[in-house]
Image 1 (tube, helix red, strand yellow):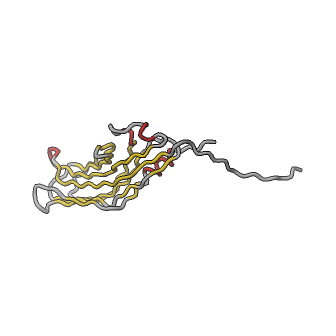
Image 2 (cartoon, helix red, strand yellow; image 1 turned 180 degrees about the vertical axis):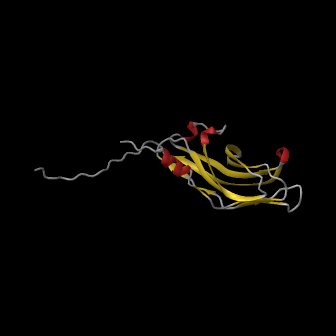
Image 3 (cartoon, helix red, strand yellow; image 1 turned 90 degrees about the vertical axis):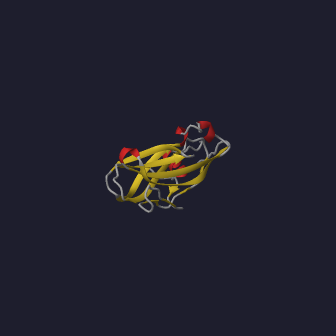
Length: 172
């Protein structure tokens, strides 16, 4: 019986997206007028025995403080600097923090296909997140981003396993 990888296992593998590392940046037309932070960020390597369509499943922890009027906040999940998933948070708060869950299939990226994750492949990905705080007219008041790299490895050939249990019982 050939081993198969379930969607949950695929998510757990590439999406061993734990949050550690750090990213902090600030940007504003006024010096020291805005702070944006992303908490720790790291992405674990993933190994599979059969071809997969890897999915990145991330929880992004963020915070910001600006001194201008806010229209909305956008959180992006990036694969090799290309945003594959985003969430816009409609808010007018000048300071906030929170968590945002984002999920994206790696093969939605313009540079990757299923062939990149077939038998005997090893594919290196840059996985990042970006937080932008927008003001009136779509202007970016503050921005922060961070990234980490991970390798998705798919073994050569098949893996075979047999297992289970049995017992002998008496019938009456």
